Image 1 (cartoon, helix red, strand yellow):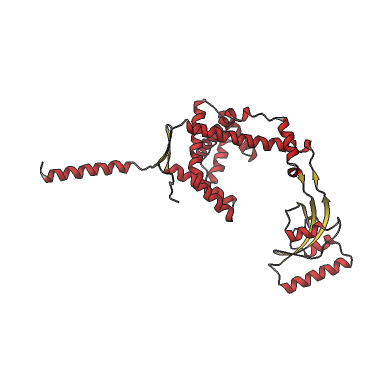
Image 2 (image 1 turned 135 degrees about the vertical axis):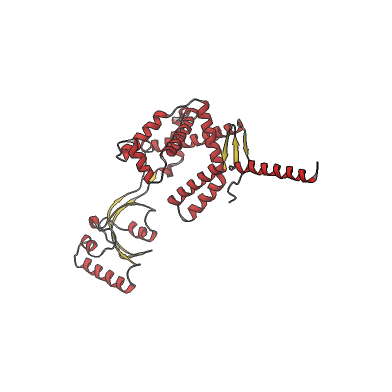
Length: 322
């Protein structure tokens, strides 16, 4: 074979190879038994989860959860796939639950038909069929967990009683304070004007003006019901405000309190003292806590067993190179 023919054959071979590789547009990230997780599926799930984090968290908490997502998403997707495979193996059907979920969604949003729901979702950028598929998969995973774990969990009464006795501090209800407030913003007013208004309000209080009337006249915060801010549990108020409120008697009005964004004059309307919940009051809370502890442990054990019994090969442990 002469060199020219050999060269043409090589060109043809590489052209064919390139043509074949051009059709392979999807990278496989992981193989899970007879299913695969592709790069586009991973990217789509990652983008969706990041969007959810951004809508719910900010600052350091967001960055912590973002790092956790990068480290754990692939494992979460493998777990989800294993649960779906188990649902198929168990021949689970969640069509009725899916229909009930859709009907409840329509009822809650005052929609009379599937067409109206589809239109409403479309206006929010949500593809209805994709959403239905994801919801069905979620219900299938939940059904597996219920069949394999939830229905077999039984709580021991003695354990519930023991938990109550060993953790009394968890059932102390902190004191609550219902307050009204006159608020002067430190962001919108110069310090000289703030001092003038504080002195003016204090003078009117001494001369007999009601706190509620002064709220209406001066406060830059809520004015409804005489500036009523509702109940606050210990630890929910800004610390320097809480320290003052704790020393007030019902009906007392504080001196002016400097806070982060301005000044407050606070009236204590009502106080609920701290108390220890009885066992009967705490029982449902304990049951829920113990149930979730047992459930989480059993889910982890169940998923570990599923993984040990399955063929799992991770081809790209860091799909997005983040």
